[in-house]
Length: 269
Image (cartoon, rainbow, N blue to C red; front, top):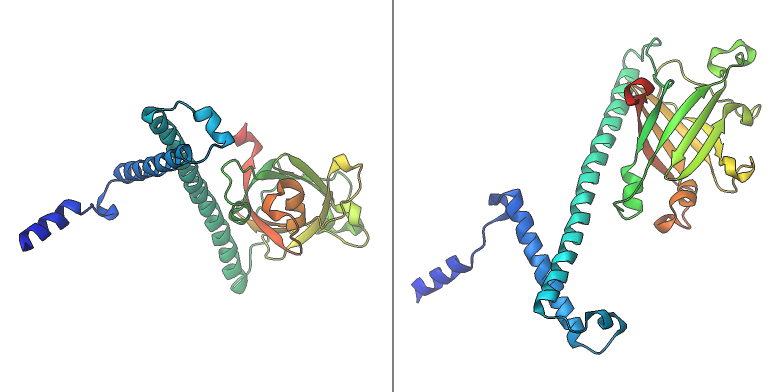
C-alpha cells in the first residue's frame, strides 16, 4: 500500500513553476484558462435560455473549445501586455527617482553646478506615470503624453534672467493644454532655474479650445527640473479626470506624478 501511495503522489505531482521554462508556464496557464472558459460556456449553454445564447445555438464541443481558446488568448494577451507596460513604467520611474535622489545628495554636499545644462528646449519631454496607470486600472490602451517648453522672445522682466517668459505645451491622451508664465503676472512669477533644482515651480494651464478661459478645476502644473534630461511633473487629479475620466471621477485635492525624459528634436526626427 505504501508503494501504491508513493506512485500515486509521483504520478499526480506537477513540476514547480520555478523549474519550468517561461514558455511552459505560459502554456500551462493557457490550458487552465481554456478549461475554465470551456466550463463556463458549457454551464451557460445548459442553463435557462438567455439573449447571449441565441448566437451559440447549435454549437458543438469543437465550437465551444474554439471560443474558449479565443477567450484565453485574449485574456493572456491583456495580462502580458500589462506586464510589459508595467516593466517599462517601473524602469522610467526608477530612473526619475534616481535622478531626484542624486540631486538631493548633491544638494546636501556641494550643491548643483550652476553651469549644468537643463536641456529643456529644442525638444520635448516624453511622459510616463505608473501612478496614473494604476489609478485607471492598468488599461492596455493608455496614452500618456508629451511636454514642450518655448522661450519668449521678449526681454526679461526687471532685467532678471530667471524671469524670462516661457510657454508650456502639454499633451495628455487626446487633450491639449497650454500655460504661459505671463498670464499669472504680477500675482505669480514663474522663474526658470539656471541649474537642476529640487524646488517645484508652478504654472496655471488651460485648454485653448475653451475660448482662452481657465477651467473651473485645479489646473496648476508643478515642475521639478532634475537635470540630465529629466523632470518631475505633478498634475492635479481633477485635470487628469477631465482627460481620462473613469476611476478618477469625483477625486480632488491630489496630484498625479509623471516623470518626463527629454527627447531632442534632431534625434527624434
